[in-house]
Length: 305
Image (cartoon, rainbow, N blue to C red):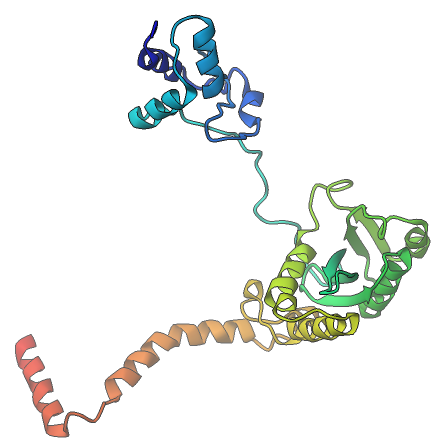
């Protein structure tokens, strides 16, 4: 072998990351663990292991297979660090300060056991997470979107000015929907087009609906799916406590009927450890008599003294 693979690998792995010189190079996707996708100060910093093997052969330095290179890299720990710069993303998405300030509308596709598809539209209130309206149809149409918005509009109060966040799907951006929104108190914005925020709140609801409820049943008909969705929406709105609301339900948040639920739960959580200690101390399994218990307690007192 004209060259030494180990000495070549040492030179190859000593080149360091130069993110300052080329920040864009660090954001290239990494297709394989063996791929080097960032720029370095070294002459061969960007080359992959397979290409390095061929490059060494072209120079007449090392004639070794790429598997030998990989084996030596694993054995000697010569893998260079891969530091990727990710774009900073907000941890908290859009949050409203009161009900009927921001709405989210979206559509999800549900596949039946027969292979047919049905389409579920829904509107959720950002502040309370309440599902205001939903509609299950077999075809996508702008009329379905307007129907859902008409049902949701029943919860509007005087003075409400709604911002409706929607994606740019054909069910939300069409002439029928445009005519419906014209002159109304609902102003539509397109997620990640006209605003930087996404429609993640209603997408999270779709995920819960699917995996926690729908996928646990055989979806063999439109009627069956409609019945399951109706049951889940009712439970979601009025029964399921939400962690973001300290145990309050979406209905309680939307209608401002909390009755101190959050504060009451917090107080009971603080009292629970003390209550458990009292119950454990007062309970007995019955195997020991009162005399044994009293003698044991005296022994403990003497030992403590």
